[in-house]
Length: 108
Length: 124
Image (cartoon, rainbow over all chains, first blue to last red; front, side, top):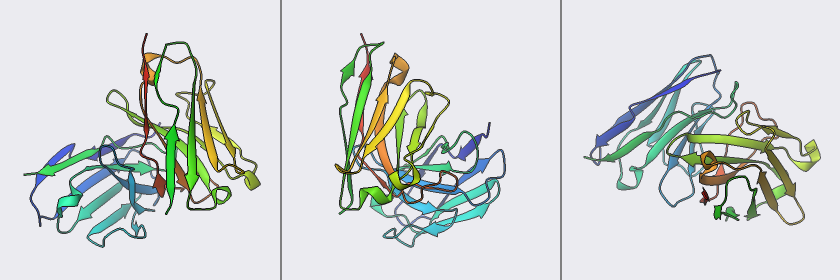
């Protein structure tokens, strides 16, 4: 089965910082990699699909990159509403729609 | 406004069955595939199943972790998706989410709207 490794598992940063989260897959998933934002009690939000396509309505400070086995999510200038937990998800190989372990981003 | 609202969560005894509903509004439900996910501290985020659009046969794909215990269905006339999970164990405890997918194929798909989730606790 495909394994997904997301790092870091937690991250402390300040408003205005640039942060990058990485997601590595054990097998080539092409560009079938998505990023989501989770906040407690709220509906999860799709940020990036197909590795680098910004979902409609998502601020342009979010950028996705990579292909194959190595992917990144970058937030160029952190805003207060960005403190959340972020997950990558692949949709290419079994087990289908598997997720990374998550990155909890909190305020330094 | 696109909205997905899960219902049916509660305390359930081991061995019993769970039936959740996902009520959709703000979009043409029949145009979308749907999935169910769950989240727990022990297992993280898990995909449970995927149901294609009715015009694609409403066929399903299930995670191996729940295969044999899960049934997903949909009623386009009511804009509702359903999840039934049988023979529950404490390991089925978690927050259950429904989400919509814009493509009817599973591969290379993504989930562009989610519900807030519903808590299911399996305990005696």
